[in-house]
Image 1 (cartoon, rainbow, N blue to C red):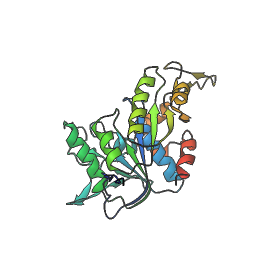
Image 2: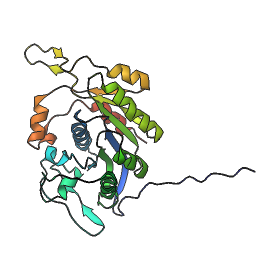
Image 3: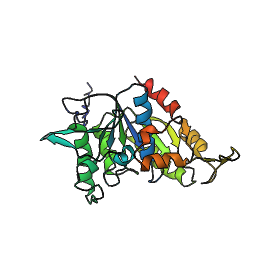
Image 4: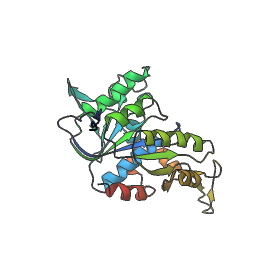
Amino acid sequence: MSEEKETTDFRSQPHKLSTIKHIIAVVSGKGGVGKSLVTSMLATTMQKKGYKCAILDADITGPSIPKAFGLTKKATGEEGSINPESTESGIKVMSINMLLEEASQAVIWRGPLIANAVKMFYTDVIWGELDYLFVDMPPGTGDVPLTVFQSLPVDGIVMVTSPQELVSMIVSKAVNMAELMNIPIIGLVENLSYFLCPDNNKRYQVFGESHIDSIAEIHHLKVLAKMPIDPKISEACDAGLIEKYDVPHLENVAKILENLE
């Protein structure tokens, strides 16, 4: 008679006052490809469609979400409970910058401490009722992604890339980690894909020829969007006005998220 193996569930529970329908992790294999931008724009897109959204900024050593939304207030709360800040449109945000005395203060922590902080943002923050919690992940395949994939019931991953050829190898590493952790990949978003010249309406591939379609084919993934180089996006982020930017680029991603079971 064969014995059934017991499976251990390492997933943490959210705060008792939180109900979260879907958790979407936004990841990248390397830094500087616009992962936080895509996270902000996804939350903004879904919030404008009438869904209740929030962002957990898991990039502890390089948090940029509060800046994009113009959030400067510090988080409040009591022992075991933290209140997130809300953007103008009602997106709830939790980031390490909201716990530091100065936003420019460096977070010089070892990996396990950073990972525990991320887990605390899930278990101790009073998120309330959410349709979508977007997790802005740090780049790479280190302690934080491992903690998030093991501790949070992630429904899917949106992977952000850029056109450079070396990205194919880095994307492969991130895809392999997701597969090992049994987390479904919703698809790929290529940022900085091209520049649309306002003078002649032609597309110029500033960072070289895109490789995202071949990468997607190798890993049997969908290309969800190819986002342009747009100075207006940078200006909106710098001014804390990303919610004011009209976001047409991620509609295909939004449709997939709306159909999640």
